[in-house]
Amino acid sequence: MKFKSKQNLFAAALVCALAFTASVARAADPLPSWNDGPAKQSIITFVEKVTRPGSPDFVPVAERIATFDNDGTLWCDKPLPVQLYFALDRVKALAPEHPEWKTQEPFASLLKGDLKTALAGGDRALLELLMATHTDKAAGLGFLSLGQKAFSPIVFAMGTVVASQVANAIVHQGATLSSMEAPMIAYGALAMILLVAPLLVVTPVLIKIKKSTV
Image 1: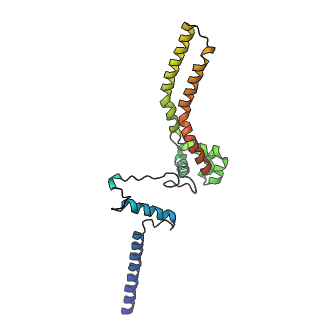
Image 2: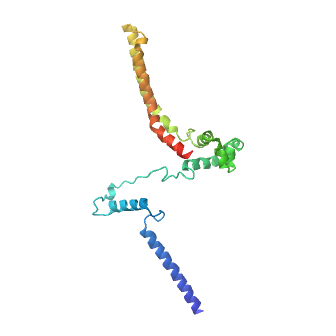
C-alpha cells in the first residue's frame, strides 16, 4: 500500500515537473506558436533591440507605436478570406428573412452546405453573396462612392463657372460655340479626374485581392 502511495506521489511530482518545465519553455520563447526560422528570429531580435534600455535602438514606451498588417496577417487569406467566411455566415443568419434563397443559387447550395457548387457560378455568384450580406448592398465597397460625393459640389461649381464664361463669350464677345471647345474639354477632363481619381487609387488593390482570393 505504501509502495503504491509512493508511486502516486512520484507520478504527481513528475507531472508537476513536466508542467513547470513546459511553462518555463513557453515563457522563454516569446513566439511559441511560430516555427523556428529567420522570420521568427528577426522579430525577436528587433523587439529586444528597441525594448532593452541602453540599446542604441531603444524606444521609450511612450513613443512605441505598434502597427499590424490586416490581410494575410490579422485576417487570414487561406483556406478562404475572412471576408468570405463573414458572408457565408451572414447568408445562414439572414436566410429566415429570405425564403426565396431556398431555391435561388448560389444561396440554395450554400444553405445545404455545398460551398463548391455555390461558388461554381464564379465572380457573379460571389458578388451576389457579398452584396446580399453587406449592409451597404455594395459588397462592402460602398465607401468608394464617398469620393464622388465629396467632389461633386466642386465639380458642379466649376461647371457653373465654365458655363457662365462660355455664355458670356458667346453673348457679349461674339464667340462661337465651336471656338469654346478648348475650355469645355479642359473642364470635362478635370471633372473626370476629380471623380475617377479616387477609384484609381484603390483599383490596383482590388484587382490584386480578386486575383489572390477568387
